[in-house]
Image (cartoon, rainbow, N blue to C red; front, side, top):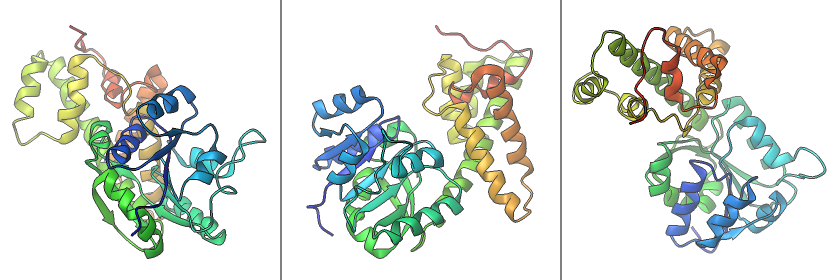
Length: 302
């Protein structure tokens, strides 16, 4: 595996920024692009290269990591959406690797791999998990699938961004399937955590005491511990928004529907996030799903 290859990161949001920082910390010259040019410039001021267009970052990168929200944005990154944005695909060097980190329908990932392979490009299906803090510290998880040739070029960069890089297959789709199952659990756990905290509030239990007890008891989950801390702080800054789980649990249900597989808990959780989104909390932190419960007084900022 060569370390003389160049790397680029598209999308400097909560996860992408941390991933770019991890690559820089590992000693790589990182090219970055974000639709918010000031964010890319801020990253470059501390070391790195801010690219002004998708064409520029594509031409500069042997391995290009895309950290955007969904399949539609991934398509826009690759294929453009008009004359002002020609996309990356026609500017990537032959043999380059496109690393797709979004949560998408596995069938979309399979199609994308074929499209890129037909143009002489490699592809790694590489959804991510762990949250912004783990992304920033290089401790997140990547659920990947791709050919040996793709890994040969990209693996050093994957290892710089993640503590756990799982290789789940030699073709696209396997990574996305595992990520969707992870999102099933994450979404259901957040919904259940919100329901538990809401019941506690309704019954007059001190929320700080409830949080302390549950986080040291068998009923705890990573999502309860993480997301209910946001509720206690009355901080709904969207590190992961309500609408993310509208999308991701929708993907969960789509995947199961194709094989007529019942998912009653996922269906209920999806409805809860849909209700929160429709009630005006779409762009708030996903813990804001607790706001759908009537007759409770939520903690306020201290």
